[in-house]
Amino acid sequence: MDTFTSSRRWWALAALVLSVLLIGLDATVLNVALPTLVVGLGATTSDLQWIVDAYLIPFAALMLPVGAFGDRFGRKRLLLAGLALFGTASVAAALATGSATLIAARALLGAGAALIMVLSTSILPSVFPPHERSRAIAVWSAGMGLGLPLGPIIGGYLLDHFWWGSIFLINIPVVVVTLVASAMLLPESRDPARPAIDVPGTLLSVTGLAALVYGVIEAPARGWTDLGVLAAVLSGIALIAVFVVVEARSKAPMMDLRLFRDRVFLPGALGATLVSLGMMGVLFVVPLHLQAVLDHDAFGTGIRVVPMVLGLMAGGLAGERLLKVAGLRVIMPIGLLVLAAGLALGALTDVSAGYGPMAVWLSIAGAGVGLAMVPAMDGVLAVLPEDRVGAGSGVLQTLRQTGGALGVAGLGSLLSAVYVNGLPAGVPEVARDSVTAAVRLGDAALTAAARQAYTLAMDTVLGVCAVLVLVSAGLVSVFMRAAEPRESAHELTSTP
Image (cartoon, rainbow, N blue to C red; front, side, top):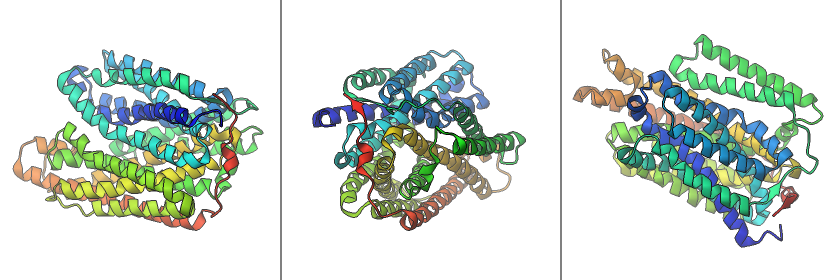
């Protein structure tokens, strides 16, 4: 660590921030392009759903084994492979001539994103000593958050001036710069023991998580009682249960189950998962409100989500400073309470309210995300054994992403139910599908009713998120141990 100079560390962080900026950007840039793909590729509604889902399933399913593979083969090496895969898939997506090709390319993008997300997290402790790590995590988190509103901003501009494939080609220069910077600046780190690959664990975790995530993604559209959804969810749960049994008996498990007995790791991971759910809940409902209720275009919508990112950056930097004074057990619940307060204010939104109040509560919610997430990740990374930081990061990110997917699927069902129940009887079926479709019909009375119904649905979702985050604040404050994380966990074996 001493030979890894301070200036080089921060340049290395810039490379890691660029890598996760790609993920945030790609997570939202496609949203504004879906109507264009109907014309450009002749995509059906089912095609559009799979274009979105094909990314999410491998993204969630591969995180757990990716962390273990990084420990075995080298975290920097696999990060570079993930960036290369992401760039290649971006070119394939841009040049796709049909829906099937684009769906396949999106699946590869999801796999590349899983590599980038987990390995960039696990590399942080090998680059930054404990006294600088919180600030690095704050900057890293802000990079991830910044990509989310940039997606519709950049995507909207590109679609106005170029063809739909340009939203994928924009990844290429970022990938090239990040690849070169990562290759030159990042240290290599791995488990010196080079454990054997846990083949049964890998197969069970990937298939189980893929089936579970597929089921919860399909549930809002097909209903939770659909046989296909039930089969996917139940088989996913069964496979994950078998995975846990296998890992408990394995001499070299891919997932160290002892982590779940650690009273820093488990509460920290739970809190981080609920923070992700709160942030994803906001990004799930607010853009549609901005477009369909407040009548902003895609570009304007992206701009108006920026206060949440600014709040995240401010909260993250504040959390980094406060953590040194008060400790994780105090700061993380405070961050969760701030996030819950922001969400609760959002739940009071009236259909006649303008953007001003929204900007305020978005800033508060963003500050809560930063204030809770940065200390949580710092504390969780600190308790990981030095030779298993990749696998531990994979567990953390798997919990966050799978929990977020489960939560958003449930929130999607809730949003749809409240919206439909809020519409007057006898409205056209297309208006029941979405508020955007209702507004486009051009009927003034229907538009007013749909906007009122959607605002109520958004308020309900934000209220539920606020309650869940509030409960998690109580659980973290009660169950997290007060002892500070072990600094020795960061003394990783690395080479510049």
